[in-house]
Image (cartoon, rainbow, N blue to C red):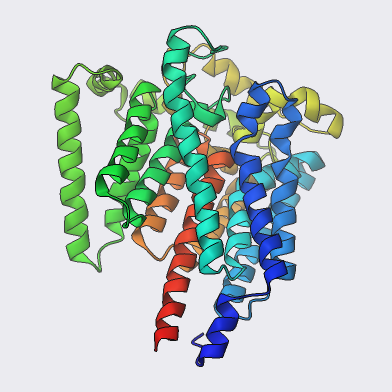
Length: 460
């Protein structure tokens, strides 16, 4: 909606101060409650701190929606469209839980794990951030990401000197930044560093290109140190997929194609000619071409859980609604219950035999033990296994709503694609720290366009 009149624009740019402070503060607290609990828990705080954000984020959303002073029809329409898609997904999840006799805590946790980023995004876009509040939220994000990067780079010499524990992880996998000693901590930490590094490179145009480039280089160096190959693969795949959406902008498509070709060419040359820490692993995996054919070990290993899940189908309804929330190979059924069963069992959590059977296969498969990229436990398979084709379709619809309504620039689309690609590799699409970081970045991009538009209207 286009507003005319300077007084109306000022009203939008300067909402009620009390509401703005409350909503912005809650947004920051919600983000921090997701970003830092892992390393706090590693320092000795009870593991229950890892669950606090499941309460803070929905509370933040409720406050933001009920207290927002905005009258902007676009904000209101987008907010309710995303909320409706979330409620539709919740309805499918409840139907699956009833049919498969899954516990109530399964429904709550699975819904929050899969939609928490969307809920956070709604909380961000439904309030009319002022330029000052926009900068404050961005500063907290950038500061947190910088702490993560510095922490990860500092962990390398400390681990080599045996000054900090690596628990059951290899020294490379234990380089996890603020997501220290968590299952996919090295991947999440790297993905966050790269995503925020790219955001800073593209948006902080008042800062020297050398500083912005240096921070992005630091994120890439972290990727090499932590042996997070699948993060690089996901980002490259997302970049290639973005080209498919540039059919109406040939000049940009050509530019992106040239950039990615130069990057891949340079990276391949470095793999073949440079003796640097972390590059050797890429050369080894790229040389094992026999693994990746249609009948290769990689394909059979990746989809080993499919026939196991199908073997438990007792009714055509299973095709529609799966085996129940948290009952197969998503983050909840595949990982969460293993790590926190002692906390969740008293709350009525339920499991399914197929989750244990898949793990039995994983634990004796050399390829899974070598790289988690080939694990048969990953997000998209987990959504289908838990909720069937209806659940998978409703979740894709939720993603489509966000893509079409909020991802209006190339960087936002790229971020969304990275999460979708991660969901086909591992369960990073369900990692709160990474998911909410991407949500905040997309929200910032949307608000920056809104503020620029309002500033242009005010100048007229």
